[in-house]
Image 1: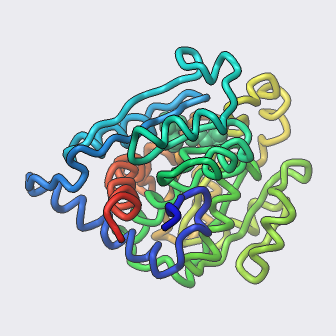
Image 2: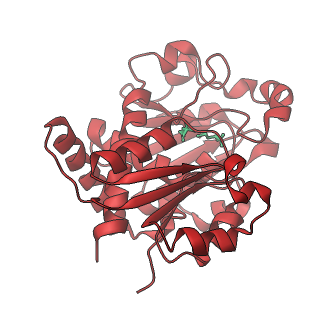
Length: 302
Ligand code: CP
Ligand code: NVA
């Protein structure tokens, strides 16, 4: 049977995704109770990072270790990938040895090509196009604090980037309405927006997007690989900062999320990210629990 992959949120059905969130909450309780649970004994995860990472690397590596398995960190700097070995060849070789491969790449298409040639499950650990693992943690965090996200209003304020694309797919899969506000030239991909018709609205107006929102989420204005645009972006994005004045327009019990790393004073003010509506630390921790649930699904479900 062909391996299941997790390249975008559309690779799992709505039922599978909801079950995965429930399981993530259970696995968190198992961890907190100090119970040993080792379903990944003798399993090995390869982790290929073309870009930097703190949360993704540590959460995947810890998930494997706590569940009895192990993980191998690989970067282009010290593998043959950096010297031009084709991604298809790397996929054939790695997947003949390990049980699962996680990749963080620039081009999304590179990850898709890897998956095409892999005999084992492949996980998207962020591409320029999307970051589905982060959304598992975000939804888990919302559910833990407020219950189901179905029918809620989520505001995405800032760049129409990989995180924004993942929120668009999440709106379809978890059935919430998403109001996106970005500068005109930084809108999300039009095809992906069109695919979520009825779930998503896109405008340049952050006030309209955030008004009455149940959840407010943002991200850096310049993503990895866009560092040279930072100066220009800071000017264009200035009206899109999530600050206390903006949060005041959301529902009084609205939550604030950020995938991190954050730039205080740019996309979010310090009083919001460090304030009492912010759940960013739980959100970061939940990367561990939700990815355990994902690995369990991919490695042990028949
Ligand atoms: N949110 C996230 O993916 O963080 P890292 O880049 O540190 O992995
Ligand atoms: N949009 C950010 C997310 C980092 C987790 C980036 O791609 O750099």
